[in-house]
Length: 143
Image 1 (cartoon, rainbow, N blue to C red):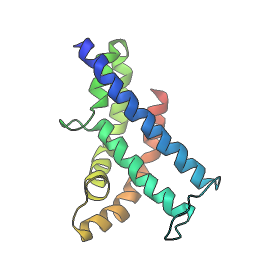
Image 2: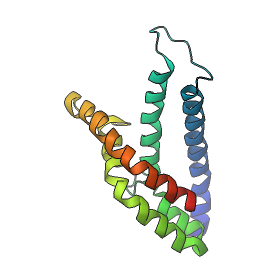
Image 3: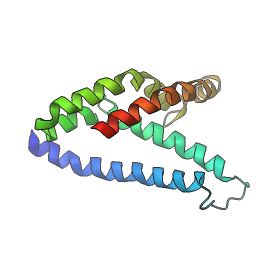
Image 4: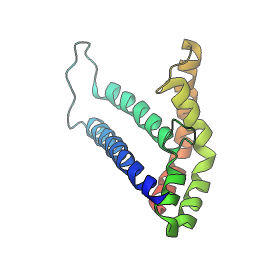
């Protein structure tokens, strides 16, 4: 089982680096360090919102326990068995936000719902996700 987890780690690592790259781009755009040129005159804040959607959806894929998700919580427990207790504690603090992240990803992120549901998810779920972000950040940091 650990051998399989180590093989999966390579894919996880690539996806984690991509996730961090999106975060670095978003931070650079938020701070005004740069703004890509586009033919439709978008500004930095437009790009920040687009990258926010990608990052939130990417995060949901990390935590997703379905066959298409990374299921990083179980994966970490396999890979780091002596840290199982800390991983489970971190997950218990993140768990209340999981439904909001999944809904956002499914309706407005990587999957696109019907227009009304799409825009409602982007507007409504954004508020829910922001409420959970502080808790998620502290959970992740403490882990």
